[in-house]
Image 1 (spheres, rainbow, N blue to C red):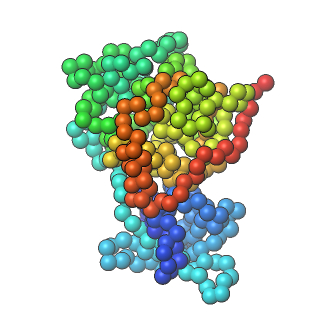
Image 2 (image 1 turned 90 degrees about the vertical axis):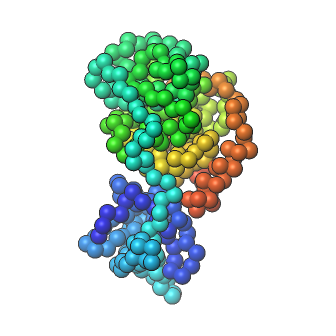
Image 3 (image 1 turned 45 degrees about the horizontal axis):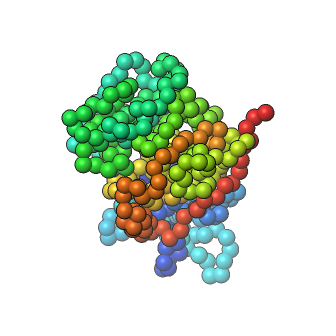
Length: 349
């Protein structure tokens, strides 16, 4: 059987409206894009594809395969529970609405290395007034566990921007997430990093807090995470506000303001950013596409950032919401995981 992951599938009963058009066979054997008890994981057994429940019990065995008129793979198989009449499931490959960029195009990345590559990468969309210029550098540069990529959208005459940066690029004409999509192209050097931490230009923090946050992400094996927000700053979602006495909260949501991905997680999440003007809806897709791995998505309360710009200050909110609705429709998604806290880890001591 040909490789099955890195694509999306339409899944449902034979002859009926599909349950979903966004099912994903993730590389680690989990199922993403569709969260149900009976479809939690997958494996290949000889020529057959098997779906497994959350308890590891086989639930559907796909034993027949053909290609439809469009040339897409179609698998059919029996639901293994006894039903009357028997249930046949169909899994049909469908084109991904968006793809990882094949190349950076007109968005070349310039390297400015003074030493070996660090473990992590911080991406900052910045202009001349970006707050990262004022982040306190309260640890020596040699202790920084992250390289910096400045995606510069200021006046071209002021490029490259001042300050430390291992990579820079002039993103003139591109919006934030479009530029990140272009930077994370198929052969990008950024895939070599352990984690990619994306920070908005209206965030205030300090170097030591970025180090601390990334250490916590690594220690708890988080696929997707974000620092909390200080209670007195500009908050868009209540769940993001720092909880006193808590190290981190496992959640179903991480805001697009300061998301941090493992490289593998970002591969499963970056494609929908291709045409994203405002970024709305991306942060609801991410946990869904990752299969909502419990215990591996979190808001880290031990580190809190300061968000300084209110919602929709520099863009039309109505258009941003419309973009989110169009994104969900394009992926055939009628629901999201919402804003759930599924567990907490208290501060030690």
